[in-house]
Image (cartoon, rainbow, N blue to C red; front, side):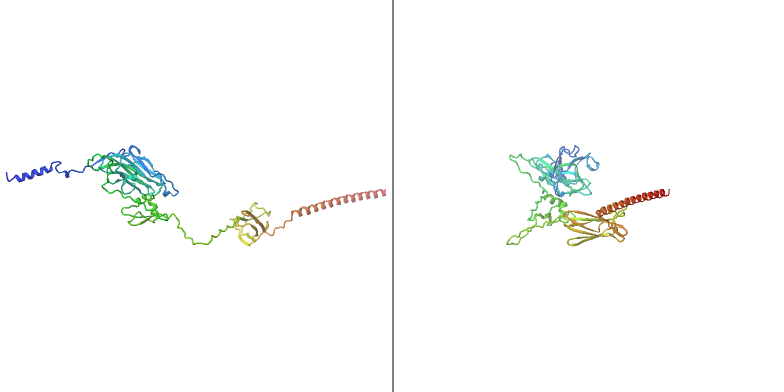
Length: 460
């Protein structure tokens, strides 16, 4: 019996060590979850959730404008992670930034994380930017949340996880989502589904404070807050990249976009390095020129007013009927006619018609007296004057239409006054002569008749 005593003692000790609660360190870590209202968005977009977004700021530069996204339920199966619908935030041809949030009760001192499934869509093909956050003190401002890193999200659902925080003494926490397109595009959207708030560690029982306590600091470091770079003398902003920075976070801190920073710095991707200097905004103030001292200011000369200019437009036509008027049958534009324009200063320009691009205009002509000389093509003769004298006033438009017909020189037209007086006199004299000759003929015939009758009477 004595030989077996040590063996029995060892067995008893092993049995005691395995009893529940004997070794506290062997107990598993406590975990659980805090219910979120409408966590799967099956009840629409507002039941349990609130919206937040950057207020509308419309600027002529679309890259500096912010617009409110649309919040709508989506039942398209490829846009749903679980259940029958998700929530969609979208906008078209606009830049926007926003998300949803919800405040719930929690046990002070508990460690919690927020998780949610997200999917993105950009037309044309692209990736949305998204992140999740949590405020351990239950505030409603996204600026007070501790955020995860920014993730690019495409059309496959991924789960985003917030930093782990310790619930503050107030016993409230607020969970947040944030999304935005990297630049204004045809259409951009984010889809949210199946949110959870998980307890990763149980806090100790805390006595009720007699005075308001300060918020409990998280054990894990919060997301890095970027301090905006100061504005330089010329209005530009230059930021030096620090460890842990992302281009998206830098853009948010300076109220601009990733695309704008990339364009200003000639970047083809979003990779940045510590110590790199990024131009956030170009100079806005022109440099001040140093003026040399002068003894007296010179008077500003008054500008000499320039009179309005005019134009002379010319064309030539085939005057087939020779009536000095365009518009007859077959009287088309005539090519090969040379126009020479002269003014008080001499010859200004020449132009030869091509029969297609007329009328042709001599433009920007100052007020003056101009002369237009026309030379018909070989085998044609002018039916309108070959030299025109034109007085051109400021802003006046004068048209010259020249006619010519195939063949020899046209007969010189007799002035209208000569035709009237000469033609009328000749017609009168010719008519009077014919009357006199008729009267004389009648007298001769009467005389001859009388003489015949006389001779007949004498013979009897």
